[in-house]
Image 1 (spheres, helix red, strand yellow):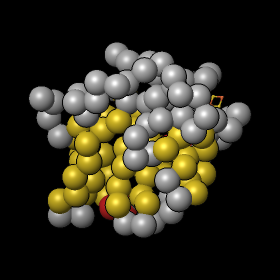
Image 2 (spheres, protein in one colour):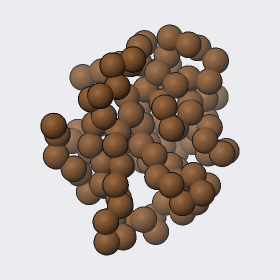
Image 3 (cartoon, protein in one colour):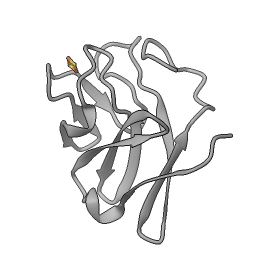
Image 4 (cartoon, helix red, strand yellow):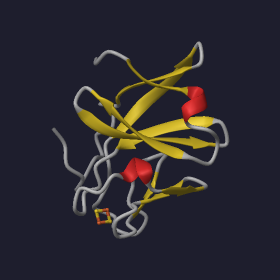
Length: 114
Ligand code: FES
């Protein structure tokens, strides 16, 4: 199992927002849904847009480049069943947000992987 990676202070990503961070050389989109943090692969599978800098509405994160939308709780594209982003496990300790790849997700399809 991968190590936890410290990617942000909780205050950097307030409720209703998402931010872009790097974890182990991978872009991560960190989203705060009403105080609960979720993290998915931050590189949009369409053309590589920066998902973390998109708009978050509820659990839906919209890519700022062409509007692809993802459920941040699952990584699932909102309309294309075969497109799903890698998700990360998230924990919060002492005001910091840590992530690690969720390798238990055997259903990952379509989205790129390393
Ligand atoms: S790069 Fe994200 S929608 Fe096109």
